[in-house]
Length: 305
Image (cartoon, rainbow, N blue to C red; front, side, top):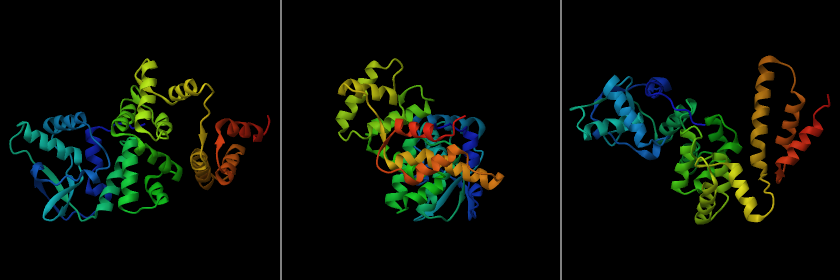
């Protein structure tokens, strides 16, 4: 779940020094003169996010400079998208005459700029799954990064990257609802777990109909995976069993195995029986296996007390 960082934390993280880059120049700039390329912004901000940054800049001032690079003699934002947008709004609203932002100039290419932005946001858990899905798409399809390389950069598994990418099948409005679920602390919107199942419905109209049906019976305005399954069961007249592909099923087991290997490397010892079973599943599972089959296998394989 995305956890909001404070404006001070964001300013502290978004700096050239935090990335170990060489600062070529420092100065001040009118935010209206900045080039803001949204395609290289790893996070999608709401109007409320920008309003909160406006208030912070007006009350507390700018804590850290934004990070920019020079493209065709114009300063283009690398870090500090929200501060830049807030600065423009301060000007447009006439809240502070002559308002300027401090900046640090660096020399990086598009791919490095995006990766740095995504990694910084990912480390402070400021990204929603929808943010991740768009960033994965950009890194893979625009910059030609392989899935395993993206997973390594984000400290995620290959299966997580594959599964998250499915969210781009949703319409823009549906994606906003998934992001809302995470930014609201799960109080409203579409849960990512249910969104993965909904993404399997190819027809956008049919998918929205399923969402609307769930919302009609939802007491709190949320779309959860259990509610989606109940809706499917009512439609088919039989119990809905969710199946996992080989890629999806390896995701949780891979993470357990990775954790076990790290623990053993640091502390010594051996894998527990449960970790060993997870390793077997990661290596040998093929096709589609139902959740109940997995649980049954684990129960049968674990040593009896």
